[in-house]
Image (cartoon, rainbow, N blue to C red; front, side):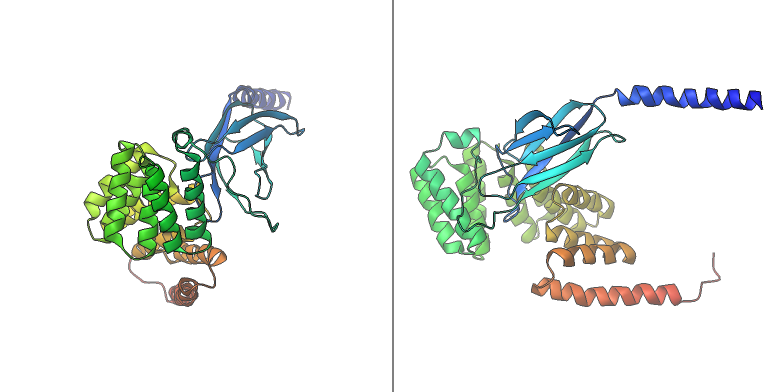
Length: 334
């Protein structure tokens, strides 16, 4: 008995050494911040990091793609908080006690107050060089395009911004988004190519948008290459991972498509179209339980649109398929 107790004590002490050493290994907490209304990255938004006692440790401003990363943290519980003017305050508790690096996606929701503020602190270093009038027209156009669903009005504002600042490559990109909404992919492609040209091919969103237009016209391999270039410039662009997954699915490269779709879901878990892509992938694999989960996730985000109504109908069919396969007699074949 004494020997057993000594052996158990020795065993536990062996376990405790690596755990103690592991607890001293620094970890990191990072992720991306997006605006919920249009899933665009929230640039230069200040994030506060506090410890378990709610003592503020440090602050950090998000990058141009909405990214942030706190390094060198001890294994503990932390609180991430954001207070952006015009948006609801966010407080997120993250437990890093038993994990390594963790990535989170945060969405800023507009405040319910009647007064509507422009997106605060969203100016990149490049945009600081753009005249204020052009930036004002850019924000006005984005509001019209994404919130008011007035693509024509947004297009007019973006074009006026470019008349003030021809080098405003973000505005060329938004012109393309307006043309796509208006059903004019030819003009959209011209604007996307102009955005790539004016930026010196340093603006990942433009490459992803251009690749998407290529996919829509059936140029899958060319579209894939262009999207990959965009992701090389901006690895955290969730739309790029989504579009890459779409390209790979069309090329029947199912495992790679699923990896890209899952990466997009990690970065933007509240974007409904990601679950539509995952549904198509799992349908190809005939993985009906996973397909059912995809549809359920989609319906929590978009239940009442025409696509949501179709998803409800598809869900019934998938459920029937799963039930019939479960009730079917087992095959005698191995």
